[in-house]
Length: 451
Figure 1 (tube, helix red, strand yellow):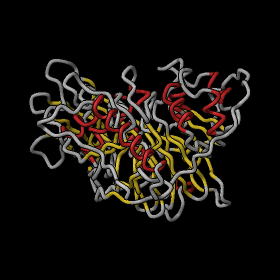
Figure 2: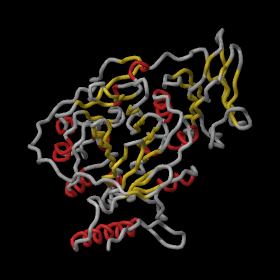
Figure 3: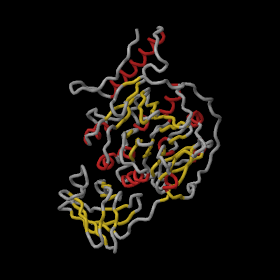
Figure 4: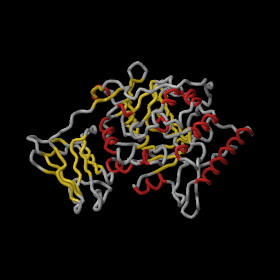
């Protein structure tokens, strides 16, 4: 007789902290192994779960190949080319006609955000920082996203979690996923759990071995974290792998050497065609052994080296010398991956269209918590998809389709108006100066006002 162990969840009356989580997780793995050794007849992937974004059902899934690659020889130092990027190309020509599959690694500065579109299904892996919310919304506009199916937050740091508030203010988010092991506050509550509760978003924790269906025939396999790292939440990063069109993709959050080693020791198959490089390409991640096991043909670093001078580090370039390595800072909108029509992957640099310059931020009213725009041009301006952003609070508004501002007219955004900053009662600070920025749908700055 075989027994299936279900993950325990916290209850209000029980102190359920990260230490207990780790104990229960290790016990379940040990007992599963004991049954296997005792001759219990199970499927090759016993102990894994399929977690549906819509229903949360637990389903039986196919197992992962646990074979590993040979260990690498030492790599020589390489000097990265910070300016390397392909020429910009018109965005409409780059997207598949049927929107079948595309990944946009959004240029969110030194933060992380990737938008994955599978036909009518869209998921995000990380949301950038609070300050990069306009760029995240611009990326969603670029992929013509109208509906989000799920958001995966790899760990609790603000450069991965910070854009969730602005995202939730402009899109319905049916489910937020985060790691089973994660940093908590002083009361033992997970920081991502707390943020999801604040935003009233459904939330599930994932553990190694889970599978999450995200589209027809596509599931994310959760490879890590395998254990709690109490010293650094980077090493509690959610590690996700999936296949599409005979190509394999690996997303590693900010995973560093410690978590990399747990994955290597586990024997899980890491080889992938595309790697989202861990921890912004800093030298404390992407060890030579790990890089050799993944052996990607394309590697993406999300960073701004002007803000994080250790990122896109020469040692990481050297470790990934087998890959075509690109850095998001060199792509104004972001790095776009699409099928190339021959079974491979095309990497491109989508251009951004010019902005409607006749519209400006005309007034900031702190007392009324409102912002006014005006159109000084001679014709009507279409604001559909444009992004209004309060730099102080991080409040963001993506103008709905059909928002037109006629010549000579003004538009006020605020409480009691037709348009407002959703989920943000005080988008303006009464004690400090406020900066309001208006961006085009693809993230080009149109107007800015500071008061």
